[in-house]
Image (tube, each protein chain N blue to C red):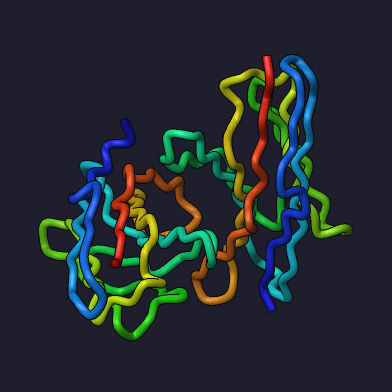
Length: 113
Length: 114
């Protein structure tokens, strides 16, 4: 079965704190892709990152970084020095099994000034 | 602005009715995806089209159908609507048929079934 679990329903931090959003996935496929999306209060979805199963290198993009660990089936997302504009719902997704996407339930991040 | 347009922005209809949601992809993108976001089911992938042909199918109900036209715009048809179909429907596009490409999302169509 394919599944994505985001155990953190909601997280609140104060601006400038670092925060990590957890994502655990399940798949039997050897080739798969993992994604993170952001959905700000305005409602649109924004693609953040794609990572394939053969590339376990961590990635950093500005204040965002991603930690992919196949051994623990996790693809965690860290925001460094969070800002109020980071307040959003973040979704982790798995692409595998005959071209289908599986989304986690999302983590709502509240960044307070 | 992602370059993906969706119409209408809001739609209110009654149970049993049929509606059509429209999506225009970014210029040059060949692939279109449809997603449903509801309070009950969360975010779900419905279906993908690439250059007019169905490429992948997710959790799309039999009452729903979609197509992509020669000009690459896509329509999602929802029929025999039920209260549970109330949701935000997103369309996304990508450059080609690989579902691992960066997807650009439209603003969504909010459907309310009364």
